[in-house]
Length: 384
Image 1: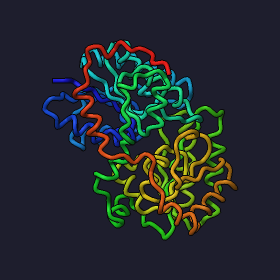
Image 2: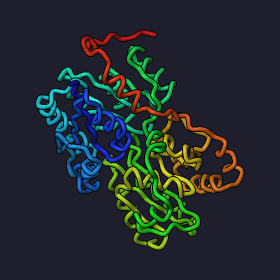
Image 3: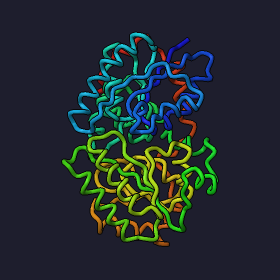
């Protein structure tokens, strides 16, 4: 049996990989190995490893690596700790292929350990650009350490090849998040309201905002600008989701807590909505406001606006439903007014999602099952 190890460090990442994991778990020719790390094991982020177990998966390894710090020093130390721990995990599990997704520092550590252990790496969502965060350099670094590449658009596939990777091992399969939208049974409005303990007002938005890690000390300033803009719309209800374990993430989390405590009638916040509740919310909110990649990848499939603030996602392909704005109060207010306008609503009803391929997991599993591993570790740089 081919042993395929999936490593996940965050709630969002697990949600994206869910159908690949389910398919591997059900395949009689595959031995699925699961390792969880990062935010999954942190009480501060909801101990979301329990969601993995509740979904019917058996976790083979739990790797503690997050220090109680969101400073650059703390994150650097977490990376080092994870490399040490993951090297020991791979020695025990001895997988034939490592399957990872994305661009977070936890996954960077995993890729380093696997590369040194001579384990072929299959990587999802390479070739993308996010100029405002350290994830940009991490993503491209993981691409160079990886051997199989599953991209979300043809443009991103071309960029992976531009990085010197062989076209024979680059597969444009679409974004895994789109598959979730089509396969998961989402909640009815009353079920969703009950699940979050919040009656949705006539106008309501979802806010998900993360630090821009390549900028210096802007998290507090930018998020206060967003909250000030929301004060301009007192009739709009707000569902907040809290940020990931990034530099200065706690600053944003604390600001959310303070704002919700002062506006309890129209606001609610969550460390993690989880995949079902998050996608269900997109059926009922008027728009998504913030700087999350989900606003560009999944949200356009629901034909609602995304207000993308600042430079965190700068460089990503955007649907017509995305409004890019500066991280200041006046620009955010202007963007919200545009998003609520009849002309913009009509425009996005006819738009399409550039990440909208389907059955991504089946395509990925087919490659993981059949690819010849005999000489895959010896990579040649492909000049173009």
